[in-house]
Length: 107
Image (tube, rainbow, N blue to C red):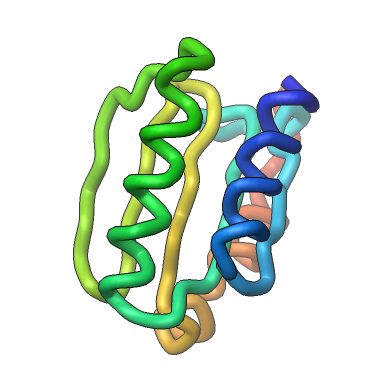
């Protein structure tokens, strides 16, 4: 898992995503084990990041189960990892990091 997360982080960093953060949710009651959040510069940048992720990760066996796209927020579901590519304003507005960090631990 750590290798997969590092590969995704490296792609995002190499392609100029900003403020890339990995949140470990393995001890939390949530639908995935990890969430990666990164800022995009604009809608075209988000689209490009998605394409880079697909072209680099699919040959490594990653399966993109679902992708929801908009200019402000793209969500990529890899099954056990969610990737959120967000505009800076949406990231501030929705404060996903805060929400995810406040989740209850698994019982």
